[in-house]
Image (cartoon, rainbow, N blue to C red; front, side):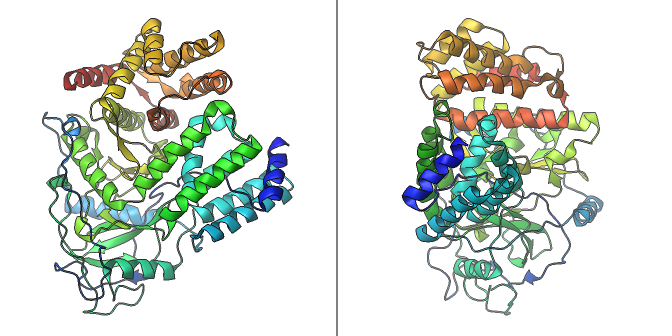
Length: 556
């Protein structure tokens, strides 16, 4: 096989394989609510301002003072904010959460130094070379990616969602498994991280009354929506066992002093420093193996992945993004009535490596496929409306379409949006131009679609007819759900596979890389369509687009 011959060449020349990076694992895959795990019990953590002696210097959350841009302010229309939950609803939430299965993880130290990660890549190389079958190679790939985490998972996600038909099938299967099975930190690493963040007395499983320190009071930040902030309560407990593991960090359930629940995302130590070397290693692998066709423009994807990961490694930035999304969703005229919410955040307990926020009850949205049709349609409508608003009105998008980032609570029928590490702003000029491409595609306006595509540098205009026809057909297929007011049957449409057939032509005949924004944008649109297919949704997409299109033109 060409791939294996390429791997042999890399291994012999460099004595290592600089591995393919896999997918960012789903945030908060499954959640549980019983106190069956041993817990950290830091008495009074966060109860008083000012750092205690021994607290890590500079660890406190110190957000910038720049407010959100006007273009992404909440709609001025009155919102239908969901009413507070009743005591019986709160009790039902916890009872349902306790019934969900507990996730199981493998604990392994993160290879954080350049030498240790190179050694891990080398082990993967020889495992792949010595594996006797595709399934054995998939097993080897899964194990190493789960251990590496970081940039390895991120880049594979960008590839698998965008052009997964181009990857070897054993890699596709491995990436799917990695989404659900990233390794977690050993408890000793968790203890060290918590002590570095909050000071002495917060070691795992070693509660010492009166010793735990609090974070310094964060400076007021006018960029944070007041409604998005949790009360300034101290933590009573942090569960020792994580709820979820992802590429950058892992998630633990916490309990505040008043008994309410939250989550703490803890970043893997050293993960930020490993990003550049991981992605550089990947470029070397691809250049020697010809694993990815030239038309995919892998170097551009790596560049975009590096930007996303750099932003995701700053949890202070993610906290600001989550607060901003909370205001945008709550201020929309329709999303609250569809049950869409964003958990509140706790700046007084958060730092660049630790993010504390409100607990999202329920399970991941892909498990909603067996719910009644009207519920599935409502969920799909909310996801698609959110996606259109993010791009065309807010110009601010959570770019990770992972199903684990949507949590459905069956006791309240609400959907919580989580994980805003990959949120990004879009340039107004790009948004205005892309809006016209989508509108042309929805109306079957072939001339405007092609003219705008050349103007925005999706095409040079010098492509051969095969490429021009494929681009036109892909655009028209993309606009198909928005062409009629009749409910669109996503599952019966085969829309993503039909777009994928045209994308294969792109990899052979495309003359230039598309605009950089497309790598994240198309990943999100594809995720929304795939979710609608998974749910078997049938919704009126035309009305959604018309409303958002007009609102976008007014805001322009």
